[in-house]
Image (cartoon, rainbow over the protein chains, first blue to last red):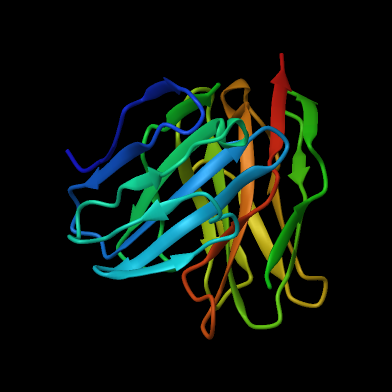
Length: 112
Length: 116
């Protein structure tokens, strides 16, 4: 089944403890992206990647890191999480912009 | 920089009534436009998109949107809604080239609630 998977789906952590949210797609898509969703703010793009080893900042990259060492994986790294990073995170992939993006199920992160 | 404004945060409507969800965008270059739908506790799914050509685009479930370049709008319409259309709808824009190609900007979302 063609899909985007994210792990973990739910995570509660404490301020400053480094964490990684994994994202993997099995559709051989060139493009991958991370978003955060907050009530009243819609989705905001954190980082995107047009291809392997190519990443660019979205609208809200501060406090996040990404890497794209292989086509199928695009992990999101929070080196020192803070409470304002509590949010619902979505990973998405696409054959290439401006095609349809396929979204993962989401990761709900709480930072206390 | 590109931006998107969805003019209504919530739209309540009765079943079988028509609905319009409004979206305005801003960009200094040509754009591609999208509408995504998010059903409760799910990820987003593409509803329809405008890339080029006909300014009126349609989805398989009866929604349509019209690209209006002069008014920088991409409003979503459906002539008769169903209970199952209850969801949150997001308008999104990406530049059709140049810098920031690949960057996708979403609006704040419009919650459509269809009442029986």
